[in-house]
Length: 173
Ligand code: S3P
Image (cartoon, rainbow, N blue to C red; front, side, top):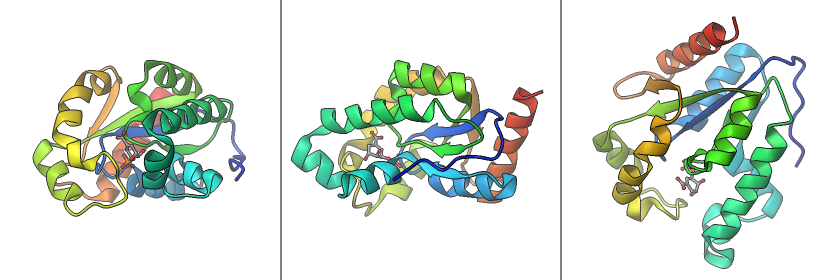
């Protein structure tokens, strides 16, 4: 599957944050408001590998999935004008963070542990969801290294998307 090309060459908007914060939903809203192509990294990996994330983890292991993420980060960093929703672990890697950070603005969507717990309840298809509390704590430092944050607790998709767009506008001035 090819990465859609954008008609503008302005910086990308890259959304990250923990599983369940709403990166895909918010990203799709931001993309449609800004009339930009939307790329979801998990979705792209699934389409290219021809199997769900859980199956990639089960058959090839997490390191193989992280390698796919690294090569996708490298590839996406060559593009501009996109709205990108990353898998929750992709930008924990400082190298991926640096590469995509050079292509645009990275915005980390934040949610409290309580909200994450609710959103991940009964979540199948996320191979690391069973271990989320430990991961949530372990990743705080990596997410904190990202400059821009938007809180999602108790807010509508619309409100969150508007704040992301405002951050992008300020950063692109
Ligand atoms: C992961 C998050 C998932 C997916 C994979 C690993 C992680 O994406 O990339 O299961 O390490 O946090 P979402 O954040 O979209 O659930």
